[in-house]
Each structure stands twice: as structure tokens, then as C-alpha cells.
Length: 212
Image (cartoon, rainbow, N blue to C red; front, top):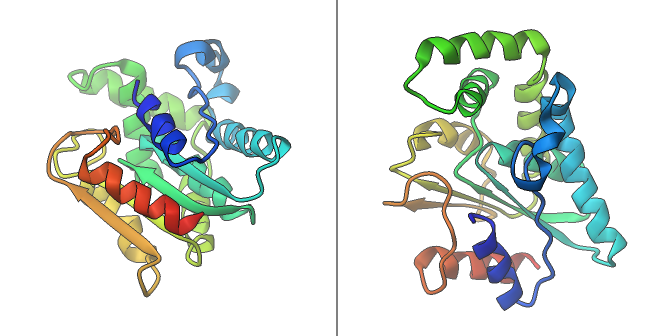
């Protein structure tokens, strides 16, 4: 449901778009039944596969969008691909492996009211190596994107990945000039749909037109 408004936005802009299910969600639920499938490296391969599919369909300039923690593999892959010309990061990602691990554990537990269980899952994730290399890869990807347009969207009401935490990577890696832009939303919580006619939708259309 959070992806469909994005597809509509790109369709209205006349831009071909491709969306993929995150591992463990919707039709891809069966792809997350072991440690390897949960690994950060596996999610990077998913993004690579999506980019390759778009190239197979004849597209040469790609704009990639990542929501929440999915913005991390999107940034990493975008940084090493010359055909990605712009990136949108919505409500994420977490700036470090510690924050990312805690967030992933909360997703697995399914409730942030179980801190002890969440802590135990954190330890299991560390032991399984599912987020190995996260921080280094993310920050390297951000450095590689300094010459390309990037839009970071985040709400001040986000409780899943608080905005001040995500602001860390944006502030430290943002290049001079207006190539990177931050759009702060005063309401809405975590992950924002670009509903037609809203300031978010208009800002995204302007970003898409400029990037592509």
C-alpha cells in the first residue's frame, strides 16, 4: 500500500517504474526463511536485480527509491552503478549498524513493547551476520553519491527511525550546493505516500523532472 502511490506518481510523470516486494513481505514472504536470505548483502542483490531488469527493458537512466531500511541497500547499490542518476530516501535509513540492528529486531519481534525479546533477537542477528558490513557499505555508498541528486524525506513524528538519527548521514555526507535536498514533514509518521496535490507530491515531481 505504501508503494502504490509512488507508482502512480511515476506514471503521471511519464516515467516507467518497477516495484519489488521487500523480503519477508507480500509475495516474497518465503524468501526470508534463513540467515542468508535475511542478510544485508541479499537485499543489495535484490536491488541490483531490479536495476538489471529495468536495463533489460531498455532504460538507461535510473532513479531509485528506498523506504525505511530499504533505503540502505538502495543507496549502496546506487553508489556503485553509473546508470543510477538520482536517489530518493524516504524515512531512513538508520545511520549505523547498531540502530539498524535494533530496528530490524523490532520488525522481527513485531512489537516495540517487548524490549527483552528485541534485545535477544539483536544478539541473534549479530551472531548470524545478517547486517555484517552495513555501516561501512552505507557510508561508502553515500560518498559515491555526492555528485548525484539525492532527496531525503523524513517526518518529525517518525518513531521507527527518528529523524535526528537519520539526519546524521545526511549532514555528514551532504555535498556543497543544492544537489542533495531534505524535505521535512511535520506530520505523517514513518514512510510517506506521495498523495496527489500534497507538498510532498509536488516536491517529488520537481525532483524527478530535474533528475531525469
